Amino acid sequence: METRAMNSGGGNGADAVARLEDVRARIDEAARSSGRDPDDITLIAVSKTFPPEAIEPVLAAGQRHFGENRVQEAREKWPALKEKYPDVTLHLIGPLQTNKVKYAVRLFDVIHTVDRPKLAAELAREMEKRGRRLPVFVQVNTGEEPQKAGVLPREADAFIEQCRNEYGLDVIGLMCIPPVDEEPALHFALLEKIARRHGLKNLSMGMSHDFETAIAFGATHVRVGSAIFGPRSPRKPAG
Image (cartoon, rainbow, N blue to C red; front, side, top):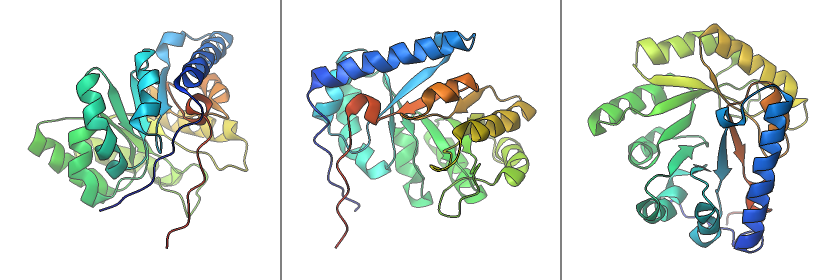
């Protein structure tokens, strides 16, 4: 079983709540500056590596959308939190292995990282088995980085149609993570262009350092972690 140490959190709960309010204000300003309604933008608080005691103050402050990268970590902390806060929407925003699909479909409410036929087929099977038709995003590797998950832009059109027509998935939008050393606006614009071709109105893009730029390019879901929870502790090497 996969086990990982969780960060103790960046400061106390009051700090996280103050940062949450700051992020909400920045989203509001960015949306209005772009002529958009702030209510059309979903803030996903990325709680990966943080324990329940770091997450609870943010829940108590009214935040209801959270993102996790790893299925096993989410399984360890979110069932109890969701029992206490049943209106939470939990987003899987990290790579999904096919052998973790059954757990992901049980626990998560939205999957952001569908990127290959084998995964799409397994998700479709498990959703039918569980009677849960989760909304999904197709992840596009806009920077064509070999180390990063996501379908390549030139293959995105065919894959989106395959997910919809062959596997019957409820594809509601696209997701991307731009290369760290490139201008994110170029990648956000590319993702929006692909989405528009398919009539997809949801764009999961933008993180702590670039979510305001993403909003200017049409982001509907921004994934913000450290700007809310504080810096994460560096991971220790395995061994």
